[in-house]
Structure formats: structure tokens, C-alpha cells
Image 1: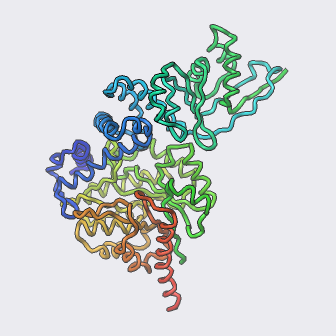
Image 2: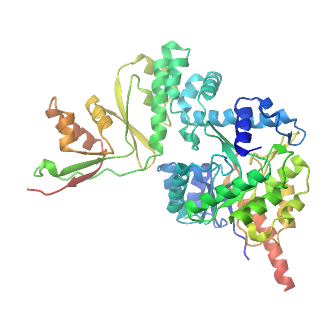
Length: 257
Length: 277
């Protein structure tokens, strides 16, 4: 049998838990296992690994939902979303959208969707490089066209309806769940790498929109001005807030007056 | 030759290692995929450890036996990772892990047939050309055996290595698991592997389910595996060894005891040799 045909059949047998897919492959189980039991060893391992990956990334969603509900939700997700990446921690990118469509608890759904989005962003941030904030030079006598700014690569700006950062991680407490659920209001959060891990800051809507618009972590004053074309005074506010938050890793100054 | 012995680097041990810098460890082996996709905390910690110890890079997702070939995107990331940490040995498993539709994230077996032999040699050659280095591949634990295999497992491994220039990471636990599960003599397997093909050795422990041995790496190295090391210690002299534990990870000193035991076995053999000279 050609390797590609063999692998198609074996994959189907493992993922679909259907040993009959390999009925024309002459094989035997390890030890005293029957052939279908041997296939089960692999079939069992497949969702178990993906479940573990989801549990690691969405640990607070798991805590909030409890073992039974989280596991049921994951198993449906795993069935609908095969893993495409060789990196297990890439698995679950669409989990928050999936929660939105599949979670029965209507009253908590929005919060759990936000929490899942937050936890995905947290994971992405954790795997981003640490970069120290730049010392901002005195720019008062600098020609605006000479300035170029670099934003920290780890900054992840997300907008949520609930203060989900209060529930997550070492400082988080899911005991505050009801309190967070009741305090619904749009909030912008930026997650960023620190030397010891990941931190979060609440930002203005203005800074959030700007961070989402920056391409390749670089911008100049022309870009900033075009972003704030409706109200030029806002450019100053954005620059002040982004610098104060420590999200700039580099300020390049060209020719000065 | 003095035995070089280390353990698999696992996150629960980061703190112990960085506060003790254990002298008993000659090198650490890292799971490539735990670091190659990250530029964050995991890599920062690894680089600190790398400053003090040689590192061996061991992958689980190359899928070298995939009929679709090895992903070039994956290989580029792996190459970048190797450039970053400069590992002494670079390895993966002689297996496949899924297909284009889905990654099963498991080390999957295949029949030892001529089409798979050709596939192995072709894929390994392409990978080694791309990476610009020789690769080492580990023998697998398997729970399905294939009746149409044309080679024994050990013949297949040796011939693939000879034809591709790759080396073998000989996992003594996997040999014992397969020997028990498929009823062959593990010593026949080991004796058939020429020493010059072996680049590295793994020691680990499976779980006995009552029906078969399951390669969980969740237990201490069992006596049967120690016996394989002892009985072949003259042939394994100088080959780097790693104690592997992936589940139910104990405190680091428990692994150190296994490192001591491996060293004792190999040094005793070395001592015996010297005495007879």
C-alpha cells in the first residue's frame, strides 16, 4: 500500500474512531489488545492532547465552567476543528467564537467569550519577546518628520465588555465572577510582556484604536496625524498615553533644529 | 570514554535548575516545539540554561514519515531555533504525526515496507539538505504492528540510517515496550544496531496497563531497561544519554538519582575495561 493511502486510512480510523477504515490493512494490536482496541489507544490520545492544550490556554474559562461543562464544550470544538498546526499551543484560536455559538448559559456567555479572548491574547503575549521601554528623549525641538516610533511587539490590544482580567491568572479570583458579570461596560485592555511575565493595562478607547491600526509596530507623526485627522489634538493625547504606558521601545530622532 | 548523562528539561524543574545549577548534569535535552514557536518566556529561560549546559534538541512534530513530505514552514522555524541554541544533537522520531487535513499530535507507526523505506530516505535527505546538518531519529513505541512489514524494525532503522546518513536515537524503553508488546527479544534488536549508527540513548519508563505496555514516560526507569543498558554498556560507552520523564514529573533530585545510576553502570564498565588493560 502506498504511504499516502495508508496514512489517509489510519488518520480516518484514529480521528473518527472508526477502526473499520483500516480493515484492509493487515495489522495486530500490542500485547493482548485486539486490533480495534489498539486503534482506540491512538483515538483516545487525539482529543486528550487537544483538550489538554485548550485547558492550558483557557484555564480560567475551565475554572468558571467546571470540569464537566468545559470538557463537553471542548470535545464538540475538537470534533469540529481539527488541529492544523504542528504547534499544540496554536490550537484554540477560534475557541472564543465557538463559545459564543455553543454555550448554553446565556447570561454568562458574553463574559466567557471575553474571558476566552483575553486568555488567548495572554497566551500570545506570553510567547512574545520581552523588550524594555525606551527612554523618551526631549522632543520639543525636533522636526516632526524626523521622528519614528517603535511599539513593543508584545502589546495585544483587546476591547471587552467585562473586566475579565480580574478573574485570570495568579492575581485573579473567580470568586469575583458575579461582581464582574454585573459590572458590564466597554473596556479597552492592553496586555504586554514584562521581564517576569505578562501584565495588563486599561487604556483609553483612543489608544486602543490607534494600537490596532499600527502596522509592523512602527509609526511616524504623519501616520499618527492621519489617524487623528478628525481632531488633531488627539494625536498629542495618544502619544502621551502610549509613552506613559511604556509601550514604546524605540524613538528614532533624525535631524534636529 | 566518560559517560555524558543528562535529563529532559521540563518547566517544573526550571526553578530548581536555576537555583542549584546541578553539576551532575552533563547536558539537557529540550523538546524543540516547546521553544521554537515562542520568542517569549520559555526561550528566555532556555537561553539562561544554555549559557551553562550543552543542549540537545529533540522534536516531536517533524513527521518525517509523512507521505506529504515535511512542512517547509516548520523546517524554517526549526532551523532558526537550531541557530539560536546551537544544539549538540538534533533529533526527532521516525514516525508520522498526521496529514494535511489534521495534525494528530501523536507519534504514529507505519509498516516497515519498501515504499516506507524509500519515503524515509527521501524525506530525511531533503530535511538534512535544508537544515544543513545530519539528523538523528528515535525508534518508536507502537501499539499496532503490521503484518506486511518486509523488514524487522531494527533492520529498517539501520538501513534507513545507512542510506540517508542519519543517526539513531536509541530509546531503550521503546525497545523494551515493543519487545514486550510484540514478543521479540530486545537483546536481538540492540545487537543488530551497529554502534556507529547510534548518536544518543534515551532511558524512560512505561506504564503496564495489564494488556500492553504504554509508553507514558511517567515512571522511573524500570529494571528491565536498566538491564538493557547494563548488558550493552561496553557498546554504549561515550554515547550521550538522556533520562526522559514527561508525565507525573517528580522532584529534580529523583531524576538525579537515575542519572547517578546510569553513570555508575557505564563507569563500572569503563573501570572494568581499564582494569583489564
